[in-house]
Image 1 (cartoon, rainbow, N blue to C red):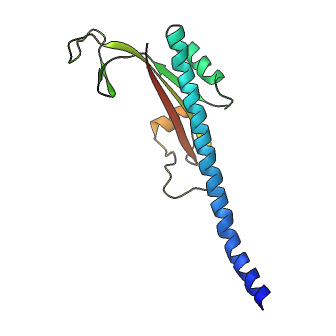
Image 2: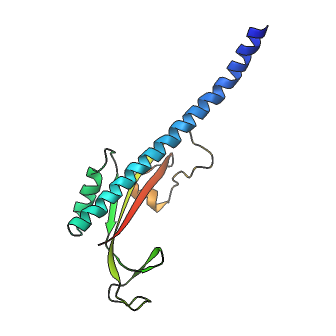
Image 3: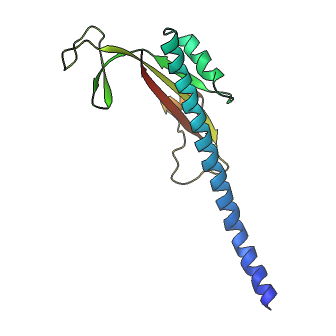
Length: 153
């Protein structure tokens, strides 16, 4: 009788343990890929700091810094004014609030589409008409992961 009870609880608990294992796999995969995206974006900003801004070369440098395939890279070199811990975009010929000229920054954004095992509730999946997802090529069954690196040029 005792063995039957143990088997019953084991059979009842197995599906829940399986779902928890799949959830851990999806979360860990997403965190690992997001870390790699951050490293790739940072490599792009470092390339600009060592050389000069060239959008195509920045994309090559960022993609070369990761072993992920399908990484979308966007790079920009706007002017901005620092204010505390933020940078506010300004025209390059404007004057910042503190009276100095805006400085040129480089912004590198890396993105990739993540496939999950299940469609998890509470997770933001791409939707039709979402411009960021469409630009990266994500489908409604995927999650858009992205990372950004900003550095003074």
